[in-house]
Image 1 (tube, helix red, strand yellow):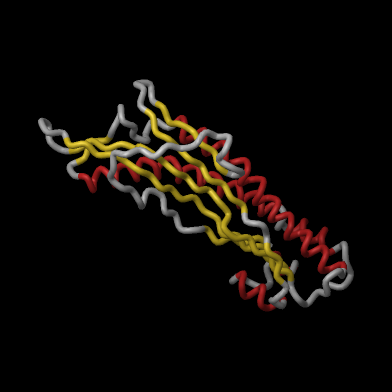
Image 2: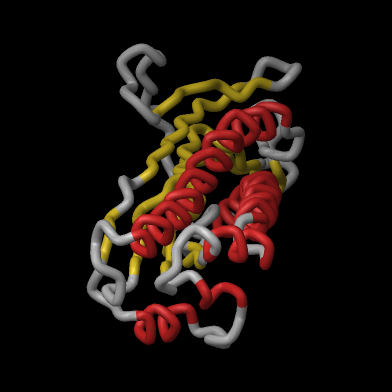
Length: 238
């Protein structure tokens, strides 16, 4: 059975004023799961972007019995999902940290604000797989239950991997993230910070929503009644 804990969005909550740009290293020394890019607009404006992707290795637990797993699921124990005594809990989310610049418009009044640097962290922080302690390790029922939960982990990995290039493509193609040559106008520095954050969030949130919808749909396929019937047919001691 699949269950996810979706991390709280922190999109655009943190920005800071400054005019000293930090420089991202070239792609080669960034290390696994980290990629660098530049956002460019037709007028020559650009912003540095750093993408961080992590997928925590799953941790297997046998600390709960079947009743404990059902309680953790917080759902009807008579549902199809309760017929296989396992649970995969994943903590994942997408966060952004950006640096922006603000310039006062002395003659017209107000301020101009734009993105200077952007970091996007799209990661799985924790993946925990529960298999009921009611099954002896190595038994048919234990092995089938663990195999089923491993399929949930596999789907998490595959959909997460699929959406990494899609995220980068959406950010690169965005016409709404304000760059130096196409800044947002604001009445104050704080409003400029807020508007920049909202523009970034409008792009990232859409990608994350599509990711989560596809993830849930793929997970539901292996939690179907026919899937559980097939699993139960493999062992006699359920």
